[in-house]
Image 1 (cartoon, rainbow, N blue to C red):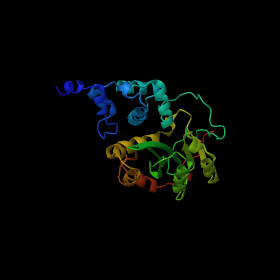
Image 2 (cartoon, one colour):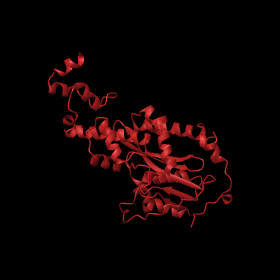
Image 3 (cartoon, helix red, strand yellow):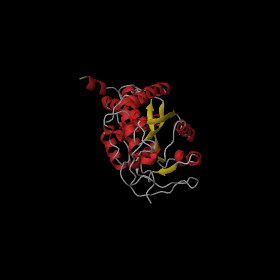
Image 4 (cartoon, rainbow, N blue to C red):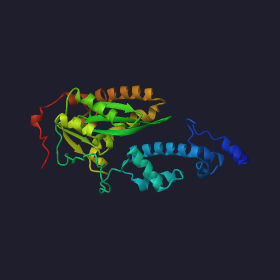
Length: 296
């Protein structure tokens, strides 16, 4: 009865009831409840910006839950959820967010001409001790004012988060600061990254080379080459970020600070025989006892 009464109001009045920044009711749901055309409302520039924000948040959640979803399937999922999107928009947004389905794909584009791309060194390598392999990656966190970026460095063997940083920009500097934090205590034999511009930059690779660390990079389009960090993002988001729904960068920083302390020191991992990352990392055999060489 209420719904019928609402729909008898003029379109202009119903459009005025839309609250784009409503904390609990998504814009798409408001359009459905008010009997408004979603595509018509989203056509305005302001609504277009809001739509992109919603789409990024939805893509982030879907990718975290289903990292094997590619661009075609993501387009289908968004359309089924009621979003008026085409595949081009999904491709653009996923590219902006650095989201790639975890399955092998052919190399379809070249690297930046000023950045050297290093080979992937971990195929066939068995990681048997801490500090044999470290890896890093960047993910997005959604805040009411937009996205911020989280970088972390992980020890593959122990799963310990060795360092992390938050930034509201994607400049190389915050990744370098994270690297310096990690190297202040120890260093790995091999450091693995994806081919993101922050990690292929001369500043980042030069710092690794200066320390005598072997540089390894995922194959382009092969997110599963860095699978341990991908799993870390899934854990962090479902156990900390999504439930807390931070409002500010400061809240995000303090929430993640507490969470990573818990993750390293209190959270048991089944893959570690129910020990914590900090316990496994502290129990270091000598590197000479492991096979850390790169296979020919």
